[in-house]
Image (cartoon, rainbow, N blue to C red):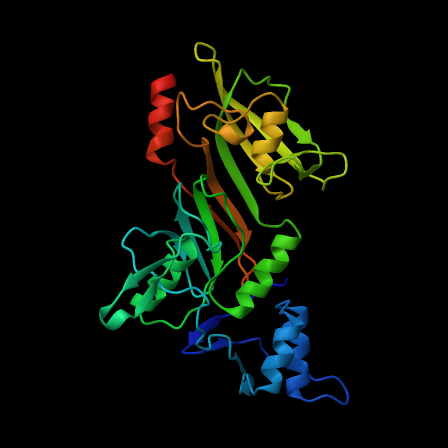
Length: 316
């Protein structure tokens, strides 16, 4: 993607200044604008075609306007909370810290009904990150339907990336499919990890004997985890590692580390003990992606949660 020229948001419109657009023979300025959007902005073709059909592409002098910030209603019922920890936000993206014990989105369980006068009931929105984010925009009176781009396990903490409009969602979904959204984790694991353990390249599939578990399986999907040993605690037979993923299989880190003989501290599903922590000691410490409009690298750090900081102090 080429360098993006000056841009600004004008209400529901994105305004760009692409410079002089020279139509090819048989084309008009709108055709030239569409070519520029494809070649220089790498804009999603499907979205641009829809905007064009709906009058969402306009030229005014040297300004090109796209109707990218139209009001949208979230599919997640808003849940107002004061606990939301925003790590990054602009007109396009939102990165939010997800604490341990909170699901990224509803899974159909745990929806409560509160009784009202007259025998009627009102469904209480489930307490998930997606519902909290919906509540954030509702409290601001902003018609934004933020969509999560990736997920974290319920008992894993770390940053979660949301797209705030359709353009950003299409670009970030495509980046996710290309494995261009990079996530780095830290984990406390059992055993003394060898410095020679640098990569685990083993396919992962479902465990037919356990609905929730995954396992290393020759018939599974490709899964690659990079391992960096940070510290060993011989007196407690524990290690601290940093992990980066080339793939994003369900429970990938947990499965790979357990298979290598180093289950995560607290991860009882994959053989970890709860002496030091009651849940898996896994945290997403950094998230990096290319901005959906500008293409500039955005890197967001998420400090360790208190539980892991305290664990580190206890075992040093």
